[in-house]
Image (tube, rainbow, N blue to C red):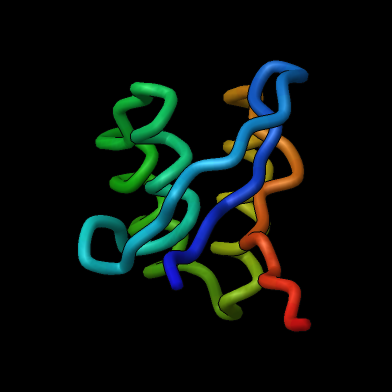
Length: 82
């Protein structure tokens, strides 16, 4: 089954399909769905990764920047079995 991502963008709940063939992670997928260019973000994220002592700094940067862009509650949708 296909994976889906649930997210909120500018206070509007949305669900999109996701494939690792197209996107590196769920953040890239939601940005592409909303037409947001991540070129500058990815360059800065790479700089944070090179200078940070822990991986948590990159995760924190990503979450803060996507919140600033208007995203919230980005998560994979869990499939219900039954």
